[in-house]
Length: 290
Ligand code: SF4
Image (cartoon, rainbow, N blue to C red; front, side, top):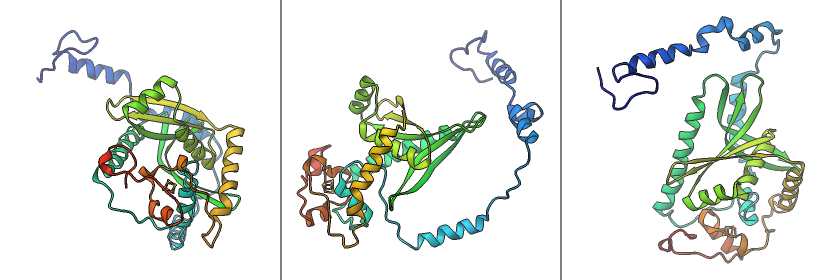
């Protein structure tokens, strides 16, 4: 028998531990094994059958492939409340040319993606009470302006269909501790999450912060309010004349206060069109780089 250091709670000795574990498991029989007594399934089977058959999946696949042949212009929820020039460039599909991406920057982005996958996997493993749908895509058209993005996921409570969105953010120790002390998420994260909520017809989002140094988690629930919905529509109305300008000549004024080159893919385009972004050398550390 493999000896395990320490004892499990409730087990008299190391030798008894495996037995204790088996007993613990037996106390909690798997719900799926008792379908005859499962109230949710009983209720579903007792309700009138749904007559509507699903639409053709092949038809849906064909429509996706056809749509893909036309480039879609859209505002991204992650950028629509940040630099307005970048949001407009993104909508136009402007040239993203820039110097080679510094390797450290790529590692930062890849680390974030890996953490997202880990948390999405944990949530996907929820068994009975909740169902997790990762990477929910949302497309809406407000006032002729397309808004499109991919939320980290939606959780659905199986018993009654209650659902809400999940937005994951990896944070440096400093940002994490600031959010913890203030007991609220960063304003940009909240706005982005709420745009996802609005464009998916959800009232609530949970923003999860992952501390990159300690792997601690924080969670904040944020709710869509009528005031936010008005702010959202106002933002779309402000950006509309620029994004729908087919001549690509009208741009929001360059504003240093809104400029953050670290994640901007349009630095060249911005400079070419009269912008004056601060370009720092990557060797400067965490500042903007190019
Ligand atoms: S360089 Fe700065 S101002 Fe120009 S688009 Fe990017 S973030 Fe906006």
